Image 1 (spheres, rainbow, N blue to C red):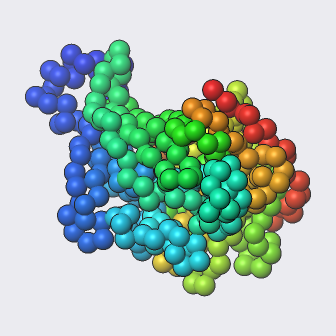
Image 2: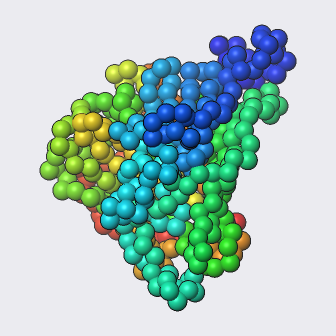
Image 3: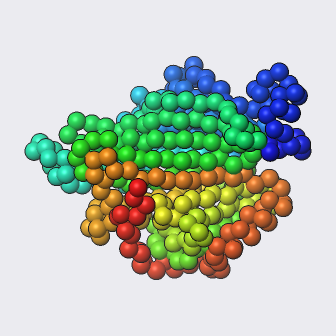
Length: 392
């Protein structure tokens, strides 16, 4: 049954309480008409529980704003929602991607994750193209989707809000990769579900990498908010551990001049899934992120507590943080044959109230413990990844 306003409903009983479902929730397509976002199509989801979020159709069907009962969940950078026509992802030495970087979800891939790199292009069999220049986190986030459909449907006694689209990252003499994305939330619910398929729609063997850059801002993060995760091992850190006085477990206040910190953690999994959480006990608010371990065996934590940015990213990924060439050298790159695909599933749950925070922490702790120290020393031991994992 659908629970709404502390009552349970099926389609008939809910319909009796109003003339249209949109009185309670739904999905609406709008187009931005001003500023750098002009022309971007946005799907506005409202579940009726207080959860609202925007899917930016023309930015890879990523999620920009997310709020719950008026409180921000998703991070907004100084960039805001920017039309992809205004972003040169390959400019600025491969760092142009940051000119469009904002929102709760920025998808990274589909053939590269990590910093700018130059990698071999032999698989494309084009003599004029010996190498591929890859910018920060790839090209897909600045690619508009072809919207397949959206709306509301009753699945038994549960009303599901949904949207589907296809994002085509393609070039001549290179990759032809299609991201088939479906986003769902239940009427009355506080959980967003993302289900993706990445398909090699071309005929050349093509490398594939994917990472979900999930970004949470104030008031989910605030001074004293805790990161809880089943960390079996800390593999890598980008920074001198104690240089800024900030470890991996607890958020500081916004800090002028803070330099970003990145960690890679090896997470324990439970029945093919793993979960992490951010808990702000001061206001009884937080989030829980769950991902499938088979498809997304790696996990990064991004801390950018700089004043004016102030964000923490939770980032399930297909490959280790060391990047594209590292994956190739270790035989870990996913090479998709013609027609081959991989599937992925990630969910974001909003935690409202002290009991919800306690329940989430119990779920995470049931999967595994985490290091007690503030500055765990990275092992530097990257588990070997099977490039055929999660194959269809």
